[in-house]
Length: 111
Image (cartoon, rainbow, N blue to C red):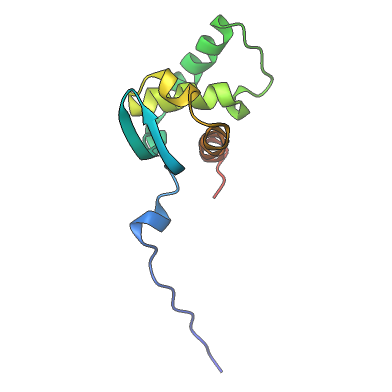
């Protein structure tokens, strides 16, 4: 017997794993956010990554694998979204870890 598996296409929400969805609304500078689109990760270049590492080094950070750090994720997120770095550094801890996981997962090719 020959069986076919039919899959339905993912909805845009399921498909876009580059959106950081907040568990609770996040307020920054009197504006409230429920999510942040990080799809700009698709356009980062080696030059962006090098600039991020240089920025970290200037701040005194020494990291063997900077792409896995929270600081790296916040800098990259600020670069790709145009939001100030403080938007990301003031995130609640759990949201910050979700951000780090999205950024590092994208860079290292996690599906």
